[in-house]
Length: 114
Length: 115
Image (cartoon, rainbow over all chains, first blue to last red; front, side, top):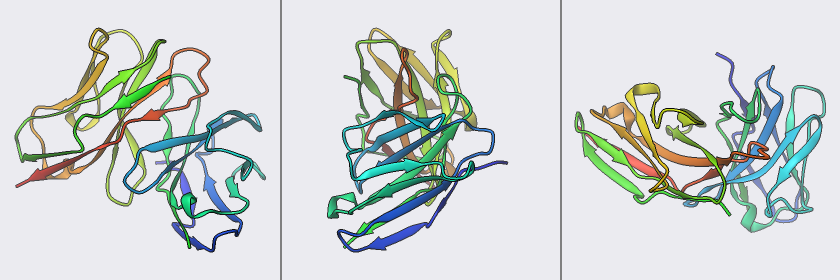
């Protein structure tokens, strides 16, 4: 069964460093998402992406964040200068359509900022 | 603004007992409603969704949920739980119009099934 994959599973970085979290969505999906979950808190929407453009982004998704689909298979989330409060589990998701369709989630990348 | 409240952070229950996980939402527009489950070290998996039509929705693994518009609720139920149902359960909503797919999640409920 097709699945969304994410790498790495755990990333440790120093504050101020750039990180890139990678996701491989399901191959025929057209809509892509990033969510995050700070330990003990809700899963929060970060950004949705379609047709090489951001469809919607949350207040969390400030200028330090960017997304890219560099090669037609990967979908990346970059944090330019990490802060302690960026420590969280980051989930990538994809769906075939946007409105009625199930979002398939990856297993997540745990980002720890020291 | 939309929000989702899951009223119970943890629900302990014995195997083969029934369970209800509560979810309330607030929204000024029409919504679509979802329940996701997260097993340890895995991503979120869709259990069921309500888009329109019958208010009783059946999902995978014997779960069902009922949409109640007047009470703005979407509680998840299972008549008889198994040990393997132990997991984190998330209720989520998304906009009915101008939808970009954004899901707004509740805080999650940990279901602990005891033998």
